[in-house]
Length: 183
Ligand code: SME
Image 1 (cartoon, rainbow, N blue to C red):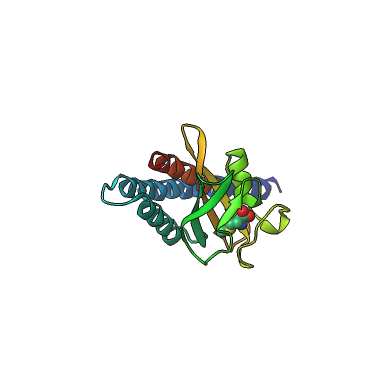
Image 2 (image 1 turned 90 degrees about the vertical axis):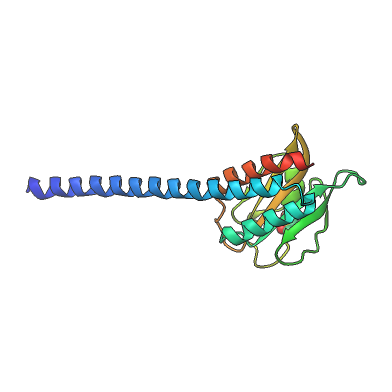
């Protein structure tokens, strides 16, 4: 009577350990992929023959190509000629009507106001949100800070609900740190 019980307990323990190891292996491979991705982005940023906009455009394209759940990738920049307003910069994806966004409005404007990353897993739950397309379900906006000052942001939309991860956030924050000296 006891032997099957202990066997079952042991099996459960092994299954849990295997699942943990698989998860760790998956994380290691995600981080390896991200290191490669960051290396390519750094090369693009260091390229002396490209303008800032070309570099930002290449980064958008690269992210959209490499990460399945990233369906719209773009930069919004602080408009130096306006009062606390963002202007759309280079992007990849569907055209958007939101070419100018006041600070505080939408996910983008809130990230600009707080100078903090804003990650939304289900845009339908957000009151302060500007819809670009009915297909968008999740969004992440990461500020670009030059010496701590908000200068631009990287905005990413996904057609998949609950698709933004802490690994994405970490990767995108590193990219925004690399991008900051361009401003
Ligand atoms: N959804 C954003 C607007 C920009 S588009 O996603 C390109 C927002 O709520 O600020």
